[in-house]
Amino acid sequence: MNARRRGRPRTYDPETALGAALDAFWWRGFAGTSLDEISAATGMNRPSLYAAFGDKKAIYRKAVEQFNRDFLARLHAALFAGAGIEKDLASFYLAALPTYQSGGGPARGCPVICTATIEAAVDNEIQADLAGALDCIDEALTARFALARDQGELKNAAEPAKLGRMAGALLHSLAVRVRARQPSLKPEAFIEESVAVILAGHRA
Figure 1 (cartoon, rainbow, N blue to C red):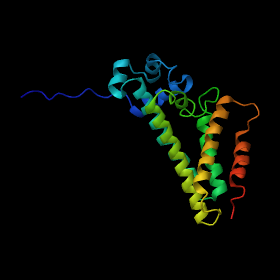
Figure 2 (figure 1 turned 90 degrees about the vertical axis):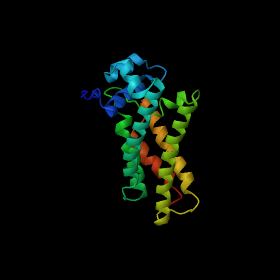
Figure 3 (figure 1 turned 60 degrees about the vertical axis):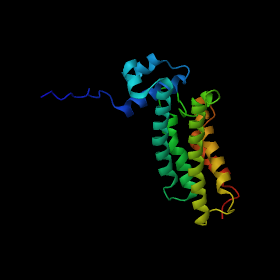
Figure 4 (figure 1 turned 180 degrees about the vertical axis):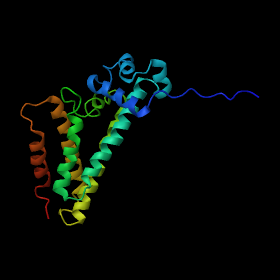
């Protein structure tokens, strides 16, 4: 009887490896990050990286996809916490700040906004990934504004989609401003003031 062949045991955790790869891309961008740097960040050699995730672009796309899933779930929970549209909207932005300000050094902003926007100009797949991420944010915000309208907090029945896009643009602006390390930026005050502007004229 032939001995049963056992597969080679997995010696890495995919989520941890993709998180480490994202950190490398986050600091240097897609084009500026080499496979050697990804290998060093993940602790995986090149053959293992290719076998697990594919080429450099595949690693980047999978790392961004994982980030989007986890990050947007956290923001969605804050947005639909049920504390009222003003508090929930502020909580949505505040939930993003720990990520934007993370890194053990200078604040890095959002890994998607701060890296994919460059590659989207020359790569159709990354462009589609970026557009999809922006759509998800707009859709969540639109749904929250529609809920606020239906609950009598907001007026103007045709406004939720417009407000959703405006509120989404504020999130992306916050990411860029944090990464730029504007000396005058006080994120919490910026959020409070911006939420007031978005809601101005729309309260029931």
